[in-house]
Image (tube, rainbow, N blue to C red; front, side, top):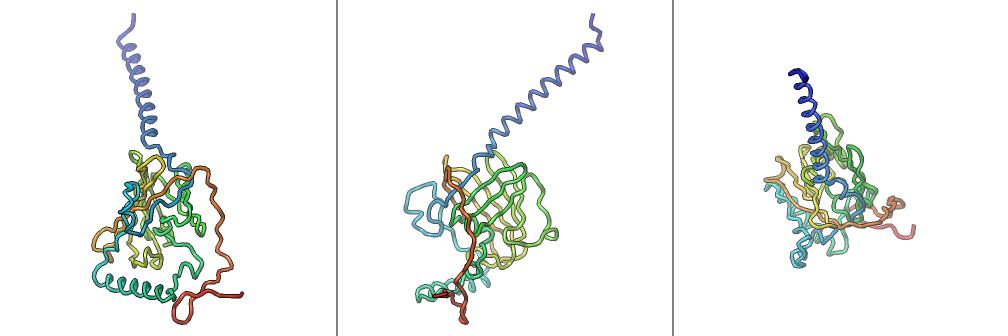
Length: 260
């Protein structure tokens, strides 16, 4: 005869078993939905990022062109004047020096995500490493961690990035970009924040939807998207900027040393 106390013990054991099966099943389902491994490997830029020709292709996998920054009026006037000066200098054959190219350094965030050269995603436990072939630029996204404060990090080219997966979308938050690391020569403050959403729009097409917020300089969030096409089997190449022949002359123009 089974006593009432024994019945309770058996019932609790059954509940524990079913609870374990439920939790195990949920974990498997969640991992399948997140499908975090499908962005691994090498990718190349897809579509023309800064050209209105995007809109004429009819390819829905190509995002719209990047809009001008929604700068506050006092900053927008200066930005527009500088852009026109660069256009005039290019037309005259005397381009104004680009500090990144002249100094032989990488673009930093978010420009590195343009992927002018192939880009690679490496997935590891608790971290996603993003490598841009040009200048061998590397950024690290720490998964399932709280974002730090600006006082706890040293500003850099790539900042401090944390992220998490939700329903197959990788969400990334980045802070701490040096003030002279700029996207399209757009000024920003110490408090600039970059949020990204990585998700597939086709089996071999990945989008990186970027939102930049900066209350000091921008009137509203600046939103734009990059697209990448998967490159199965591609091996990332070494890119070391050595023997650079570019320099800035006394007028601020970009020149190339000849015959050295």
